[in-house]
Image 1 (cartoon, rainbow, N blue to C red):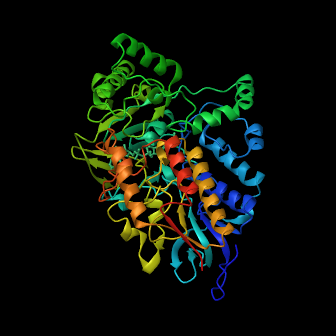
Image 2 (image 1 turned 60 degrees about the vertical axis):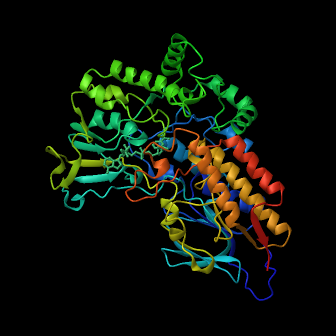
Length: 543
Ligand code: N01
């Protein structure tokens, strides 16, 4: 990009992109290949993949269906890649992202094994100075975060972990060589999507598995299966329509969203619908394909929550265990809904024990295992499936300082503030892909990522066309957007539930509902309108 200032030296590169997962790869591609800019990517891992690089735990697979959990920006790519099954396993998604990196020759623009540690805005030059853990310092016009929403692993501060004589792992930083649980007494802490996926394969291998559960979850069977050749021919012939459906939808999924209230039909009709979705479809269709008011009406939600509790009791032989596995104090869908393969069935195995941490909380980790309030459990291995400092943690690990040296950590001390989830007042030329305040984690992520990447690159192109060097959200636009994000969230059942959506899983984190629940299609329209009005709510300038 042209630097219009006679005095300011040009930055080293036009853009720095942090992270090489779905968002970082596409951002690098877009800036380099479509806009022709100079780009430097940085990635802490030794290869691309982001979340799919780090989360290699047993049972890791996608909870969105492969034919739409993928890039749509290249028709050649979507025509040449064939997924094995409805919900591909982590290694297959990692292969896909490596294929994308190779196919578009992206690796040459990305420094792997390198973590960005700090970024400071240079006000007099309209650029960022970026530092890495390898000691590199470089300047860029645009600093773009592609660090992901679920990347900062949360190992809870349980006393005694440093004295544990066995091995311990967090699922989000799993050893590349894998872990052999054969003959081991394993303790798994956490029953979110990850714990629910990891429990069956670990139980199948371990001598004994104790699952330490603090909050029970509503899990729906995935009904995973291989996808056949003719099915793929059909998908590939209709990819355009499938992607259009995703873009026109609330969640970025190609499903028809029901227009019917769960309370508008007879109990028999409802039961038949739930049963059909449970036994034939599984997955997110259970949430999106049945009735339209699970997330806004408690009485409607009760009908589905009760159905799932009944299913748990049908599957699990021991009534006391089934009771412990049954959530009762928050509505279905207000935590991210997990989907599983044989999760509840696993509690019928003789080598699996469920420990209810609500009755007997963890007190400490001991050299030999883990102590709850009533006894010590001897363990060889502890698996932390305890989630992430979601949506803000990975960005705040970087020491980011905007105009006047203001730090992002200070600015977000009481919760994240953004305009459209993509920019932050006081931090010009910093873009956040799928940041807090955007639909992000409530939607089909690759689609949300593509929309953000394209909007950001269009914005940069707009600046370039006009010889401008700076774009910054106004405080007013940011404050209004923040109010809107909370207002739409407050119209749903989401905010009251303790979940990572509100930061409740991280001790001391401010309780703010972080994603935008207004829906993907309306959000996309809003972003397009902002751009059409000359980037309303942003100040564009040049020097
Ligand atoms: O993390 P979580 P996750 N003592 O935060 C418990 C995506 N994902 O890694 O509910 C004891 O959901 C915590 O208990 P509680 C998906 O978006 C996708 O499972 O806070 N327990 C909870 O049970 C998902 O939502 C896929 O009371 C403690 C668990 O640990 C997101 O990632 C697969 C504790 C954490 O659950 C995160 O899922 C996997 C403590 N001190 C993940 N601290 C797919 O695409 C926490 N817990 C398939």
